Length: 219
Image 1 (cartoon, rainbow, N blue to C red):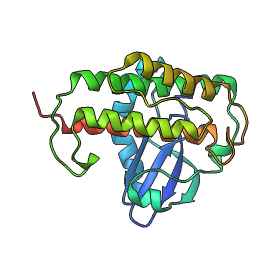
Image 2 (cartoon, rainbow, N blue to C red):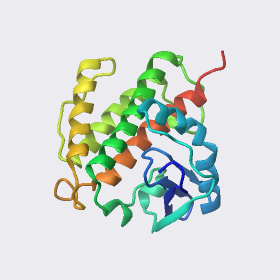
Image 3 (spheres, rainbow, N blue to C red):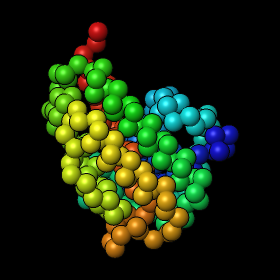
Image 4 (cartoon, rainbow, N blue to C red):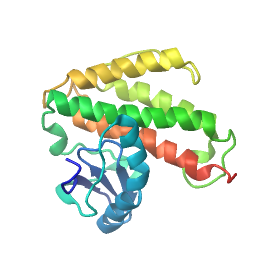
């Protein structure tokens, strides 16, 4: 899979476009145009390679992409998050593909755990993140993930930042649900299909990991 051109979904809004790699959950970047979004995906490939390495998944993508779908953006897109489910997201996942994508999600979680310890507590101010410092960013990710988990039928109390046992228990429940799915339908009622859930959850984790890294004072 790493030797072929990565497939991408382009979510096209009026002010921004998100390019999301189909088989690499979390490798997703925005730009003002399709070309800019794809360019940002390339720029972030080395950073995503760290996630793939943690997951034990070979990563050596082509610098060119195959656009598998274009979908219109919505209010979530304009706000700054990939928010539209593509027809590609509704394709079934094999058991092996689900395990691989969940491994990449776990790689993203490992990166969040790393920056939660290694990054400075106080971050530089800037346009991303609403002025939050490190611990507040981590708490935000945990809170959002609890809401995301409900879209695939997983419910758990929101773990407190630093409560490693509760965080791992929540992640294990979510990972198990996503590994076991093979249907093209959402896991619950009006929830998210598994492919979309994987890429949206991993995007949110890594977007904030990279935010923390980018806002960490030098030295």
